[in-house]
Amino acid sequence: MKRLSLIWFVLGLAVSLFGQAPTCYRVYLSDKNNTPYSINNPSAYLSQRAIDKRMRFSIPITEQDLPINPQYKQQILALDSQMQPLAVSKWMNTFTVYCPDSTVIPQILDLPFVDSILPVGAYQLHDNPVAQAVPENQAPIIQNTISPSKDTMDYGKGFVQIALNNGHLLHSEGFRGEGMLIAVIDAGFRIIEETPYYQDLVSSGRFLGKYSLLPNLVDTLSVGGYEGDHGTDITSVMAANSPGELIGTAPAASFVLIHSEWVGSEQLVEEDFWARAAEIADSIGADVVNSSLGYCDFRDFPQANYPHAELDGQHSVASRCATILGEKGIVVCVSAGNHGNDSLYYIGRPADAFDILTIGACTSDSLIAGFSSHGYTADSRVKPDVTAHGVHTFCFTPYPYYPYNFVMLGYYSGTSMSCPIIAGLSACLWQAMPQYTSTEIMQIIRESSHLYNNPNPDFGYGIPDFYKAYKTHICSSEQKPLPLGVYPNPVTDKLHLINHDGNIQSISIYNAAGQLVLQHTTPQSFFLEIDVTHLSQGFYVGTATLEGNHKATFKFVKK
Image (cartoon, rainbow, N blue to C red; front, side):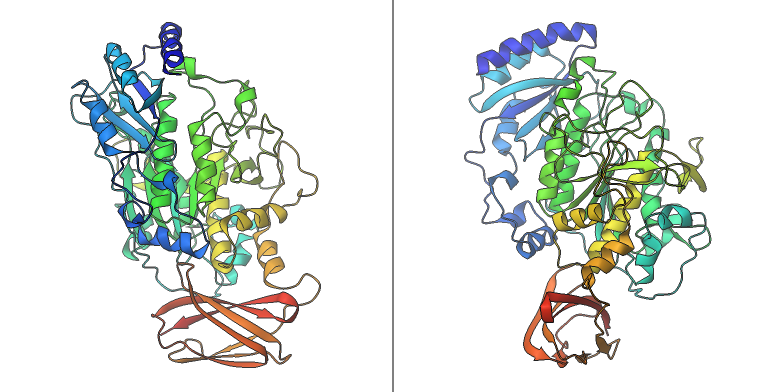
């Protein structure tokens, strides 16, 4: 096996003569033997929020979740002083390194725990050390300002882009993302903390930090900071809360920002950065991931280009990690790509992953955008999954001429812009229906789309209706919503629920983070008095199971 890998590696170096000579390598490890980590002590590599989510949805913690053996990393780096760590993936069991001296590669391959090696890039590093690895057990605390009001919101320029998916109606029910954590994987987040347009996010305690996974690559520092704007634009489509100018699709959610991409180059190693970002999103307990990134053509490392036959969710580490991310209880939203009008044509990676939402772009009058990349995958799965407004989508964007540090209201086009519309509304929908799993939420979104019964490779299942998704699943489709009275609201000690049909069978109550905090079962009652004195102050969502397994959702605030 190793010998074949070494032969492949030599051939790969020959092929690289048509591009740039590799300096970055992905090392595939054979095992996680003798690791200091254990599935019995997940707090060493998962936040409590992530652990709680696993328990809530019965998602097992397995060897896949264990970080790679740190001794293996040390032994690899000890072979050459020029070598530097670039990325690590516990799910793929890989260690990506910068190694400018290719004669060291056979020595790495000879290590007993190394399975194979793949060249992934041709970057050069600065003399400064690479960025430090981010902690794996970050534990963000959700500190949302409670705002369950049904007051009409003045969306300003953002009304059309949210109304196309009936997201404004979901907001009007009081679901704006409270308690939900969205991780944004993108190409930089310049001046988010400084600008007044993001002060509501920062001052309310909902901005939970940034990670930068890019090492000190020569190219990334050669053009100032202009490449760091893309993530700022994308985040505003969800997080903006400026009445009369722009209100985003999840204006009350919490956000973590992960910088994994530099737009000035396209090399395979960027998938390694994306995979690492996905694992961070899981480890901090994110509910939704938005990634307006995709990999279709590695123009600066062409030996890594791939044919459409490999667009199957299996060949790319980014795609495989996106699939795993969805399996860990996260709604994953990835842009389809902007190659609908050029020779690349099809969606990129990780848009071909399994059981995620791949987002295409359309106009405000529901026509497909010409640039929106097409499906299907090589194995004939429907992609994109759904479509949202992506032509002249409004956002808050930094002034385009670096280094002037101010933000203005502008608009851009691309599936980069349609993706956060769906991601933000997904967070609001899941807030409204916390009893569902992430996989179920994604399927409910597909089923609400206008072409669900007749999908095509342009729209996928079509334009989802989030209000329809909400209404369809909180009450029977065969009858009107069943009345459920809830008082007092806000409540201090005793919460009263009344249904005059006398058919309340059980109650489940979830906190703002989506955790089940109280359950009560009763036979065919029309009145319930529930003691909530032990609950912390905050915003709660409850689900009542009624006769015939019908559901009714209610909200209340505990003082």
